[in-house]
Amino acid sequence: ARLDWAAAPLAQPDDLKPHFEELQARMQARGVERGTPTFHAAHCLSAAFLQDYLQKRGGSAGQVLLGGCLLRKHCYPVFSYRLPTLTLGAEFGGDQSLPRQAEQFLIHKGLDPGAFPMVVLPGQTHAQFAS
Image (cartoon, rainbow, N blue to C red; front, top):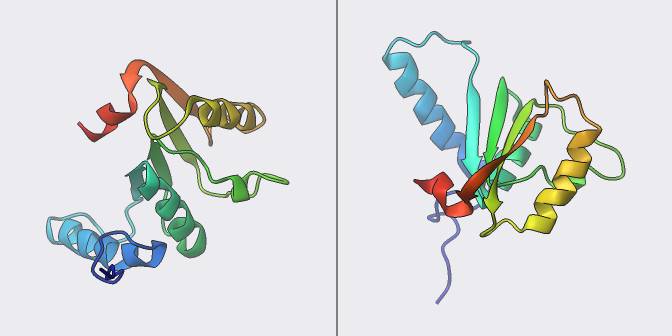
């Protein structure tokens, strides 16, 4: 069977655009003013899509990565990601490996903690981000 990528939710970073635009329109319909700072959040693999989307298009005050890390392409050979990012990891793995969290922690040690904080939540599992 062939996967219809156009019908798959969040199949590619560009697929986020219509969803974000619809959400923004709904928020404005409920009284949120145009131009109000917007923060974005994503879990696991969607965090990778979100980073690429926001890096390319901008328009966000910041992002929260739940069980995801900044992509290596933004970290090596020099750190190049511009958008303030809160990275939340879980003490007990899951889809995100502990060695990858440790690598991200080492990257974060050299970053501005006000713009790029990283928190590993004790006693939490990766799956709890979905709860």
